[in-house]
Length: 276
Image (cartoon, rainbow, N blue to C red):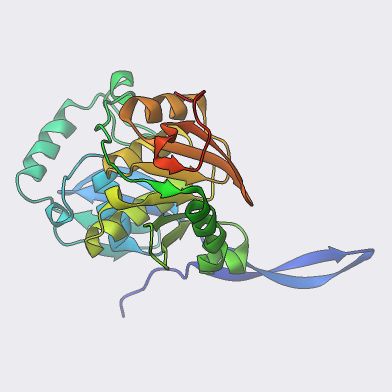
């Protein structure tokens, strides 16, 4: 019998102190398991991730890392479960596999999790595609979309321990949401979901429940997202990259308050003369 992947959440026993009393209890917490991406038989990266939305994860990762330019170039995603973790196997199409093999031959050595599969420090500062979207969103619409996100986070409602990446298009009543223990994993899953559903990221806003670090901006730029909004603050490098590629970066969204760090012209009803 083929073993399936672990459940995204697990209930574990614990001792809970409430007031002055300690007693046996239990809590639902998110699962975290190694997920390896292999392309043409070569392992590209291994992420610690929530075991869910595997096809979205594989396609989205390949898109945001620049390995493919369209979802169909990822081919079929084979999910292989073992005691060690989960392997997502892809054979890239349309000449992408040959280009990837050449890239692998030139790689200097192994890399870490944040910026995966890069060959040098120079590539860590990879040029990003220019964002030229004419999208405009209202401040009220953006606030309302972020306020709907907690209710759409099914895993976080159980665990209070995972990040979410969501997509909101002005005028839409629903959000496309993906969750993961890793914020960049959640964004990769969202990128894959949008691509596989034929939804253009250029027509809406990426919402994040995390801080905005450089890889978040890079991944959002690779799918053409013109606006990214987050509940926490950005890093300085993330602000520079967003400014340079033409992305609107909104952060520190708390209730009705937020701060616009770059290209505020896309956010209507905002005073923005002092922001570059």
